[in-house]
Structure formats: C-alpha cells, structure tokens
Length: 146
Image (tube, rainbow, N blue to C red; front, side, top):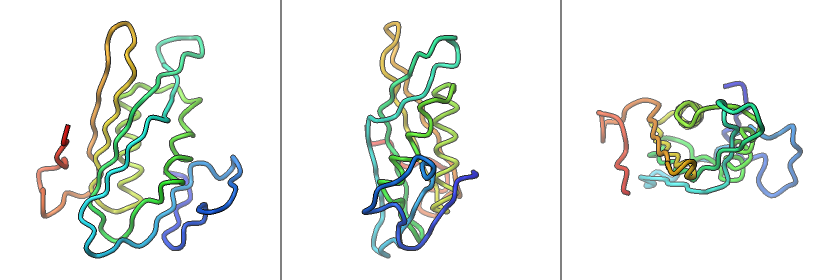
C-alpha cells in the first residue's frame, strides 16, 4: 500500500480535503473495551475490466474488524474508497485489495464484503479476510451476520 497512514489525530477529519489526499487512511486510538467495528456503505464504484467502455460497477460494502490498537477514521475510509472509481478491477480482486490495505493499517484481521449491483440478472457478493488471525477466531473470518 503506497498511501500515507497516520495513527495519531486524524488529519482529514473536520477540514476540506484536496483530491491529492484521497487514499490516505487515518486512524485514531481504539478504546480498550471496543470489541468489534462494522462500517457499511453503498458509495463504492469501480470500472468493469471486461468492457472497453466506461461502465461502472456499483457496490454495497461492509468492513468488519476487531480493533487492536487503532480504529479507521470513517471520512478517510470514504475518500480511500473513492480512489477506485476510475480503476478497472473485478469485484473479487477489489474486495481482497481493500481487505489487505485495511488490515495493514489496523494491524488486525479485517473482513470485507462487497455486493455488486445486479447486472444481467446476476448479483455478485464476494468476501475477503486479511490480516493476522485473532486468538478469538483463529480460523479467519469474523461472523458474517447476514
């Protein structure tokens, strides 16, 4: 991951952000009693790699992780996800890439689930788990929960 990572006071929070700062993932200290963080949204697009035209794929997404020392700041996550809007990438590869990037930032296991909007009558859902396995769940993924 080439994006800059900050693990103190979130740099993007509470101020206007220029496009050159998109992709920076900010964090803040986790509370020791925090056991699970789940973030969801539907503002994620990427370009279909199988079509020559500019055909966007639209996604609903969920990110789940058990904080170790830090939590991901949500505004920086939104701006990070915006960086994919002009990238040609399959849903399965996008899901794995996001999981790896976020796991590297929080130094914890992260589960990412993407549901691609229906195209040709088919809705695609993909899930990826990245990062160190936890003692709570050494086999990998956090519970999907529907």
